[in-house]
Amino acid sequence: MWLTITGNVLASENNNEFATEVAEIKLLLKEQPEVAKNKSISLLERSKQQDNELLEIEALYLLGSTLRVIGDFENIEIYIERGKALAKQYNIKEKLIEFAILESDTLLQKSNMSQAQRILEDALLFAEQIDNDKLVNEIYIKQGYLLFINKQSELALPLISKAYNYFEKVNDNSNMVFSLNLFAMIYQANQQWEKSIEYYLKAIDYSQSPEKSYEMSVLNLNIGIAYFKAGDLTQAKEYIKKSENISHAIEDKLGVAYALNSLSDIEEELGKLHSAIRIKEKALVIYQEFNSVNSVFYVNLALIRQKIKIDDFDSAEALIEQLKTSKEFAENDLFKLDTLDAENFFFEKQSKYEQAYAVLIKKQEVEKNVEQKENVSSLNEMQVKFDSLLKEQENKLLKQENESAKAQLAIQEQRLVNQILIGVILVLIISIILFLYARSHKTRIMLTKMALTDSLTNVANHRATILNLDEEFSRARRYNSPLLIALVDLDFFKKINDLYGHDIGDKVLIEFASVAQTSIRDVDYIGRIGGEEFLFIFPQTDIAYLESIIHRLRENLKQINLPDEDHKVTVSIGITEIKTTDENYSEMLKRADNALYQAKSQGRDRSVQLLNTQRVFAP
Image 1 (cartoon, helix red, strand yellow):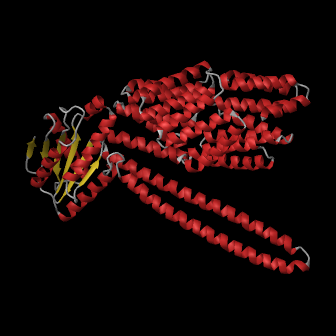
Image 2: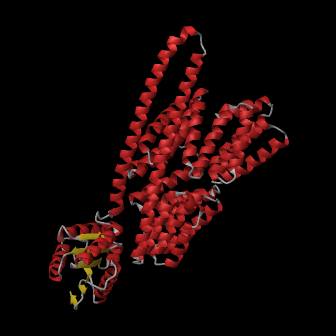
Image 3: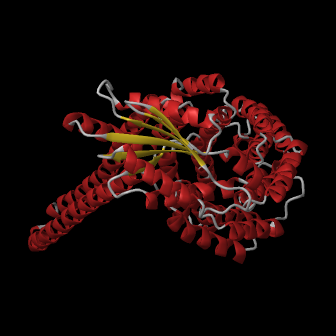
């Protein structure tokens, strides 16, 4: 579409050679975006020298498009604003819409999704007014992608399907590939890996781009990520390396960074953490060069977790502090939640439970704040629409009241209709508000459950377990009743992961949690407080009864089977009871941790009891 406009505009200036140059830059945009950028800058400078503003519009759009592909969003806004102003001056409506689409992409990169959505809505209305089906369907794709990013795939699919059917009908392969790529991303987000890979491969078949092009780089990267999610690391690495090589060939530095970031994830999955960190840090340097805010933030988050896993706590702590003092942390609640998650993981891995609990409290406060903002935003949007509708009705009434006296009866009738309409709208708004409140209440219940349950084992998570311990400790102190706790650690669990893989390791954790729940009473508690570490809480329990529970647990553990029948799952246990001198539950946890350490030192597969009267070693 834009080449047709360019041809018409340039033909009117008798400069057909520029139309050829514009077409060449468009082809280079796919194969060599850096070269396309330099040629666009050259074309822009010549248009200014010749005072050719129509040519300048095309050069500005080409330059903006190349900067979008390269990922240089820092300078793109200047060219978009200048292009919009000129397109408006010359009333080139199609170009105004194209610049609006380009602007929405820029806002999306800066996580300003609401503004991007508003711009696309306005552009869609404009495209429909001028009956430009191609632009209408291009906007459908952009809106579908935005909905997908907002985790609203069920709303995105109809828009993308509508656009795909149109582009298939008009044989627009480029936009068909874009649509297929989005279908694949949605299936990938829903963990339908095989379906996702099928659509990515279909997109490659439809693509008419050269082997070494931006489009092929993106498709190969996405296929590799899908294979990675499906657990096929060999295929994943092959496709992602191919994407990296293409990005190097076309001098797409940002594409190289995306590939390196994914290769780091593969190395981590293979247990090569030091290699994963080195690769991830290379990707970070490129993201920082392009001032890619989102990518810099999430790569730093991944580095924090990788460094924690190799016990490099000093580096991890420095990165956490860097994120917490960043502008993004202060302004973006989602960034803040992810950072607090990483900080909680940092403290948990060091058994600093009080600090971890304090971080979880902060996170809960942020989650409440996010929910309140969403509700306020929804209500404000409804209020604006309602006010607009009322204003529209008032204007209609004023216009009618200025008519002749013969229309008075009709006006009164119209007023009645309007009042009824307003009443219906008020009822509708109240219904929506009540629905939002019910949904908010339901969401809070769901979030509370998720916040208190370990997603893998379905037992209480660290936060819920500590809350239970604090409550039982206070109750035991208040009524001077007995309270026992047992800190349980699965022996040589890292070896299980290394020998059989993380899937088997996760299965062992799930089966252990199930066995443990069947071994205790309804009044007892169990929670996962670390990777392979669980805390049992036994209110109103003496040591004799606890020993019978421990014996039953060890017998039930024999039900857990590993690929190697000679390899059995065993546990080390540290047991303690409440003391009159204990000021808080942390002192009990420290004794239990000390007892667990002694159990491991004694050779594992045993329990050590640190009680008020004696120390007993029970293998």
